[in-house]
Length: 177
Image 1 (cartoon, rainbow, N blue to C red):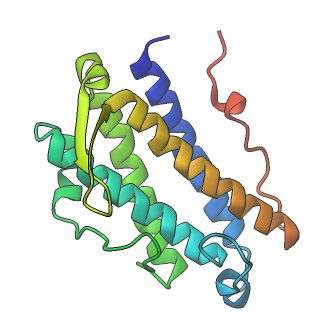
Image 2: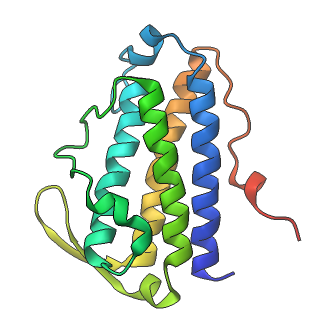
Image 3: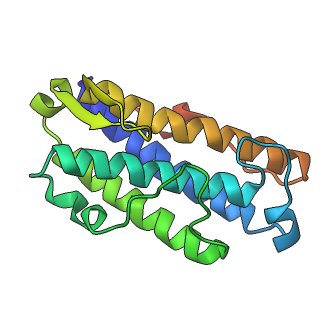
């Protein structure tokens, strides 16, 4: 399996899991959705917003560095979030629409990425303005892992509230031979 095929698998898994999480979250009352549960970003809604914020930040970095990627043109015109804990949406349906839009964009971006890009250096500045130069393929791995990390928190919170997300294992999305 190539690095690109791995990233395509991760993009597909990312979309599949986000759909499952949003379906499960849709069962919550608004009070349960916004209740501070002690997670890194407080509530389920806060954590969902954080995943979207982080993805926008990373996608803007990718767009800034790889100016030829036409698939992420939409991100170029989006405002860069100023902090990781910004609440972009209080309305779950609006948040979900933007999440699903970005998931399609991520799949298109990965399809457009070349093997040469994956082994090249991504130059960017973090939220504190500190410059970094890291291999793009590894940075993409972090990008997908970050969402998995916070979705794990959300699935735990949902489980504690009696809501079952269902199967979450990557193996479920790996094509059979």
